[in-house]
Length: 133
Image (cartoon, rainbow, N blue to C red; front, top):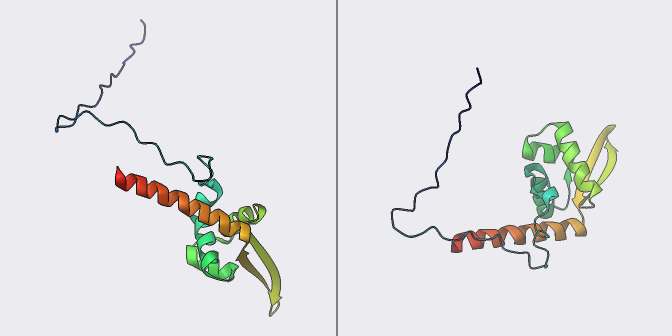
């Protein structure tokens, strides 16, 4: 005996009660830099990395422990995120010793500041477009 196959058919959503036909989809605004995805930096998008970049943009420098306490993450998690930002050239880390204990201090670079501003401009454009819709 052959196994029965059940197929669920999905109907199209009904038109809104107002009687209006659904409007066309609205595209996400293009970046003012020409490339539609240029403003959306996926490296910065992640919560902890965006937090690191924002905190460093507001402070001349922050230590590893200060960043760790700001975002309530583990040493390994923060280290991995900071390393990715370092590899991209967005932040620099200076390592030293204080009272025989290692001390890592992070600063945002000019490249990092520009990348953060591009990202924020892109997000602001999306927010404005969404509010106009």
